[in-house]
Image 1: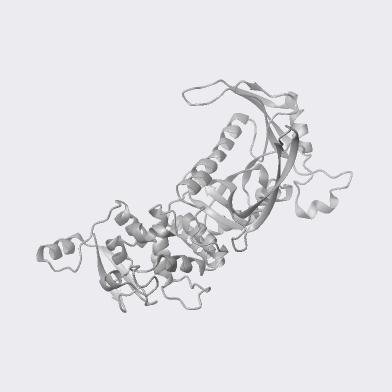
Image 2: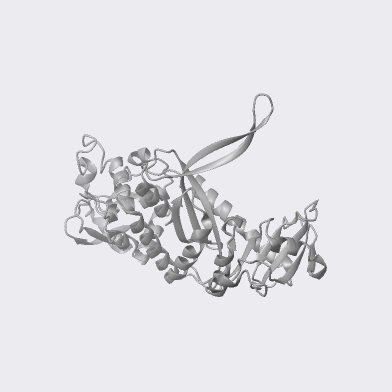
Length: 435
């Protein structure tokens, strides 16, 4: 149980300078209960509230919220600390729609008191919006509040929180990071949403194959993720048509600025870009593993280098859920023309030019499938490939971001449910969900 021990100015969330600090003091609580000298006693319906608040106080989280300026406001009725704290608890309680906060969040009297609302606020409300029937505030006040935080403010807030988590010691030692992007599709009515055209084949009524053009609207969330702690280390939110690879270096740079010591990064094929990969290894000192594209010269060379490769085979292990696998590693392939330093790009057409070397893993058999020559999956890496099985098992970790990242964010954390159809609201929602 928490007791308020310090108040600065009046206890009203309408006062922007209001702050309230809580501490745990069971002896004082017991004495007040025994003597009856208290205003209100509340229980909480969710068991992790008190430990979570204690952890937030250790990180000084709510004070960080109060420092967000909310530059998009013309007239701010509620301070940033109140709005962001309410939204954090909306996310934590799994509340999908803004219409549900009045019943599922605002009715938790104990939590509302902890966040700074007075008994009068809870009884009479804080304003007349919704004819004064919404207490302590109207649901749309929370949605409007999130829409008035600028995206750069929310991104800075996210990075400050990650820095504090890392400094606190939640991430120790070298990190194997995973990077991926996921689409947040919207309607075309969303403010500043992007537009992407996709083409797919369908059968018409006569059974003839026709190509259909379709437009999708929305945004794309691209993030770098520590596979062990499942903590996102850096996040970018862009329009849906923008390509992921142009943000890869920004994500790694921001993660390092946040304090993450990245040792290896597992990358999706969509991020493949020779110059970016060269810089990851040679400027950032980070090893990578990434699938090669079938039309690349280095892919063809790797597939034809089996005689010089180091072979390994793994028998099926049903207990460990490991299928049969046969593969080989080949080192020092100097044929990826784009894998060079930016300064050497001008020499690329020279007869004596040689790009930097890359290593490759070629998978020839998987489960009951024996790949035809020319169709074998190929992984490119800067790691040693004398034990190619280890590289393949390492890259298998990349699937974690699909299941414990993208799918969990959308299905369990309601990442797709922005409080309003505006760019600011959607980006504020994403960053607060990531936090």
